[in-house]
Length: 356
Image 1 (cartoon, rainbow, N blue to C red):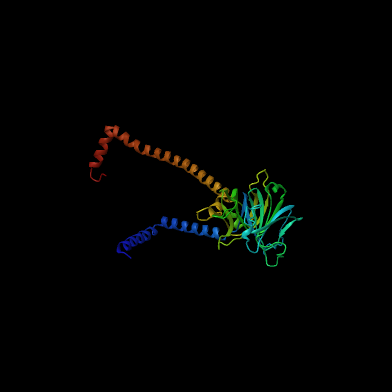
Image 2: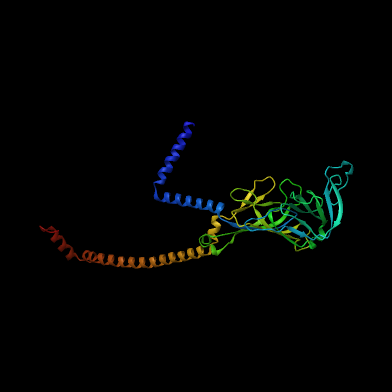
């Protein structure tokens, strides 16, 4: 290490050690350290719930069971009515190359139409819903090994006209959810959205019956890619998803309501060519949104203000009494100075032996 750098570090260490000898500095350092520790503990260990409402053209869900909540239902059934099916070929056929049919390339897919009362996907499936080129597409990205592949295999795409979104109904499912298109992927984006972060306040941590309260909320930027991730490990976490056609005539995407598990969870937000942003409630949010703490601080502020007012009144009375005593002490001197005989008497008494 260069001698100059050693000198700088030594001087900095000496200055820090000298500063810590001051009680006020030690108090400030202790408060900052406690605040940092509480913020880290709250951010990585406190449970919360994240709710996202969005309009998106792409949403993917990996259907998984949640052992803690004993979720057993599959996704579905999807009452699509007549729909087109693009079945992925075992091997591409270049001789069939041509314009795509319903978004499916003829050299990669066998395109047909069918009608079924409903369409259902089992647990363990990865299903992607897309609204693109005026059509609603549902792709079986992955299927469990136990699935009957004679019916349809991985990569099969089911599609209907997007104008029939109003017939889509409302679906609910639980699994690993991603909303929007991943950065660099040419799929339909997230158009708009909003998130809310629910957690416990400081009082709620001490009294669990108080429950969760809204701590923070905000808008989701258009084009973002959203997932729910563990605050500790960063791994995807299970969320509960409800989606349907949007309430208006907007056929750009699906209306989504995603609710994370109550865990130390983050909302992971990714945008093109940027680092992921993790959204979570902070310890400051927990303090500012604590109603009991706000009432307590208001009460203490009122008490402090009242004491200040009373102190000013008492101080004014003491000051007036002191001024009165000072006036009384000065007045005799004034009388002596104005009486020549008194002045001479005082001088004679001081000149005599034993005089003061």
